Length: 248
Figure 1 (cartoon, rainbow, N blue to C red):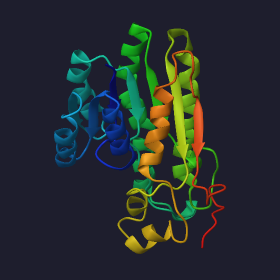
Figure 2 (cartoon, rainbow, N blue to C red; figure 1 turned 180 degrees about the vertical axis):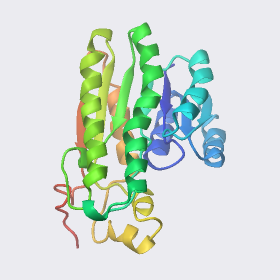
Figure 3 (cartoon, rainbow, N blue to C red; figure 1 turned 135 degrees about the vertical axis):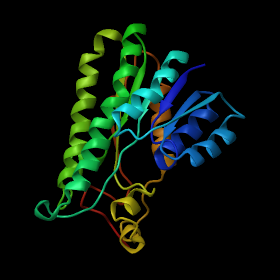
Figure 4 (tube, one colour; figure 1 turned 45 degrees about the vertical axis):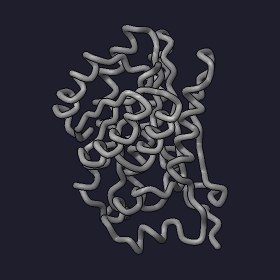
């Protein structure tokens, strides 16, 4: 039985991936900041597979190192899903918040690296493993008022490609999922709890759901060993690009 470590597993895409992996008999290490939420998910999924939980904020290097050390000592990670990330604010570059910029760079870029490094070390030593980085359509295009968020997701795209090149000699598969509009708590966080603005993101169209992305992740990890799905852009039918959306 394989073991997958999933960051941002307490909600949204991370939770959906965890649930689908559990349905397919993959042991799980669930990582996140919400201890209460992870505990609830652990109780539910532990009826199906072995569950370990680790609580940390990916932006805090010390927290990551301290939380992952015992996990890696006791587990061999076959699959790493770098899902944790965030979007804060949506403003033109000259009106952007430095705090929002720090949060996005620290979470989406540095946090991904903090988590990946010790797990990659283990995979390199074993000469096997698979990494799935959850990116975004924002890593492929830049749209108005998306500036730093788009920059952070372009960095994920570059890191994903760099990982695939550097880890090729060790037989490690590296994949990226780049979704368009997905109806999770993403917009609520981006608009700082403004429900009207968050809901308007999906008005007049049917977005993707977290379960749609989970199915792509499952497809990636269920391919034969000689197959690596390196990158998948997933859009709702109503969305043609970051800024072109059919509504109504």
